[in-house]
View 1 (cartoon, rainbow, N blue to C red):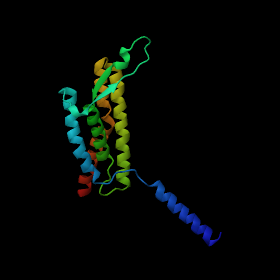
View 2 (cartoon, rainbow, N blue to C red):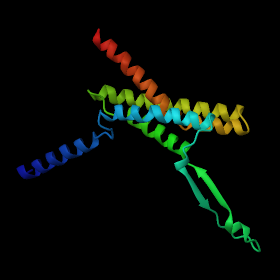
View 3 (tube, helix red, strand yellow):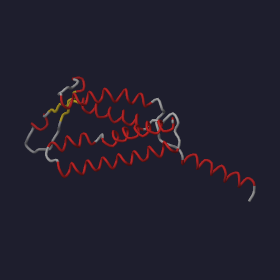
View 4 (cartoon, rainbow, N blue to C red):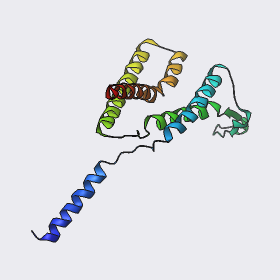
Length: 174
């Protein structure tokens, strides 16, 4: 092989290796932003769900149109919905994503492996909860469980990952 072909192969190998190790993580500072978003959105979500708290400026009017024959009233039905609980849910998801998927100050293979194992563990927990809920809970209570279960994967992941990172930092400090 000629020297130029060997150089081309090496360049391709280096580029391929660099692209394979790219991680889709937020910068480290996003963890603080995630906490700043998460805490008020959790409070807002609890207030909206249990305290019937809603922001008036988040109320929107939807006009419904229908195809009912002989009925003009269908064309004039107006539905008002409030997006406070949707805002809270999106904020909780965004906050947990930023907290869970922000780079660590030292992001190495051990942290990546720990992150992967915690994510896998949280998916298992989520589906165990879902399976038990399907078998045990019925009616409108099931909807409540599903609302909470939306956040289970991210919440369990963040809690487990943070606890294991804390445990590992204490072990490494000894």
